[in-house]
Image 1 (cartoon, rainbow, N blue to C red):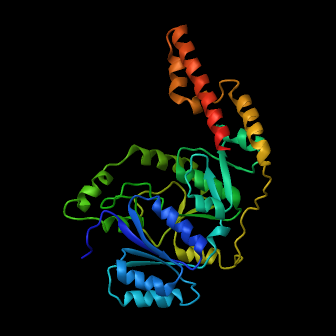
Image 2 (image 1 turned 45 degrees about the vertical axis):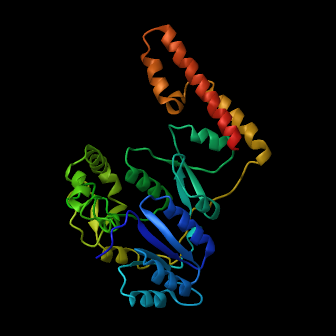
Length: 338
């Protein structure tokens, strides 16, 4: 039986030091995981497994001194209660990351990967990106993260888009909407004091947000059904999504049997603004953006709302002054960061 721990212990084995640092920083951001070791050597990794008995091992398959599959076989012979996740040798640094302004990302990923900034048409980001000559892509704000991702995918490719999961239903017996790999990780921390029944109690309630999401997909299904499919291994989905089709891996294989073997990503052209000009351009852009009240609700949502609801001119003037002060503070902090 697995010993109860407050955090899952993770061991990283990857011969690429940059990838190792990036993955380590990414996992360290999660409160449920504890990275107990990281090495670029398969042999050292095996010794670390013997020493720390980790819950999870992330193993790169393409290792120089010893093949990752051989290392996995040796670890399995130890008969430890350790889950091994095999990683391919694909260069993840070649994958662009599309990030919205509110998105969080490890510094190592920002340094090694191409970042494609996203902006919404109703936000301030577009004006800043334009002023600083930073290439960015428009994203659709439609109330659902899945819907935004699908809209972006449809804009990037003329081919089909596949969604894995997307049941949008509360999952009885699971904390997360199934199918979801996170369940296996959460289940490892179940114990007598914190039982599975306690953990999944909230999932028995049908949240209103899921209904809103389903309604959006159903309303857009006729448009999406031409190129968007819900992909699974015959998973028994609770809800249909309008006219969107559920397909299996056989369908996926047939559709893409003749597809090119190479992956083509959007071409990103860097036209960075000289560092010496950044503060000046940012200040000019900020002054232009903040001259009116177009972005007050985004930068000062509470004060903007109270300003509109003010009953007297004195109250309205007080909130106007607070908004102006906060916008000036925002500009100063932005200049300091740059």
